[in-house]
Length: 333
Ligand code: NAD
Ligand code: LMR
Image (cartoon, rainbow, N blue to C red; front, side, top):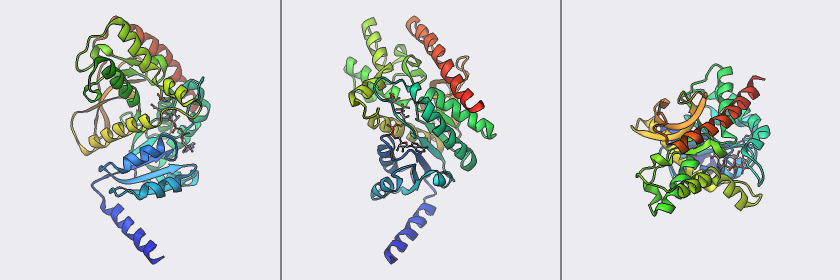
């Protein structure tokens, strides 16, 4: 008992003293994405305090992760009555809470369950940490980001710089698939993927790949289709056991780490994300953004598109418009 008390006291001292790091909350931390994401964030030296929240199994995941000998202090929060405690003082909130797809489903089929989950979570963020950077992973991202924005607007705390839909997995996949067919190291490849995060709204700009590559039309068709359907490829391979979790946790950490480096003041932190945007006539769009101390500091234009990409953009915008409206109406209704 004495040892436990002593341990807790020391942990609390460490949490208070860790002023150089950031405070990060993961909501949905016991899930398929949440668990590896929690593990990887515990390994991130920029994190001083890690809050793990879920409606099930948060204490188990917290106990497990907390034994890792890295510096972040870990605390668990279980059930909606502890949601606000999980959020107070957070710099970055990552949301992978919600149900995943099964074969035959679209991401939009998740709307009925996940819209309410994201709305409730964002109401608590608006109350407890309205200045936090929010990374939204829960699908359908094309609608859950507008839902978050509407909730924050209603609460009078909306800052378009701080609400980011995570589309990093599309970029990660695109880099991998391009590297595979071009015989390159994926770490050296950078494919901008714009639009949104579902089917035809996922628009890889293969004309802007770095290092510069020239593809045949057959390669462009193959790559575009594979990148747009990468999520479905995993859903089908998992055959009812969920969707991408490990590659998503990797992508989420890559993006969260970029947000934290930007919060620290690092320069030139540029990634694709789905944000409130004026790059097109739509109110939300994914494109390259520069991250800084306040979140999204600059949104880059799409750059020159070829005819194939311009046609893809029109299709993407048509679908995105409906998904955005659906999210907005859900909160305004
Ligand atoms: P999962 O079912 O394994 O885990 C989800 C977790 O959320 C569970 O632990 C569950 O208890 C928790 N949860 C449910 N309701 C909650 C609530 N009200 N508050 C807090 N937590 C709650 O699912 P997963 O595989 O981790 O996927 C989670 C979400 O991420 C899904 O919507 C999925 O479609 C999405 N996803 C997005 C991307 C992307 O690129 N943005 C990639 C993969 C998955
Ligand atoms: C993905 O792209 O893997 C996620 O959006 C999950 C899914 O349902 O495909």
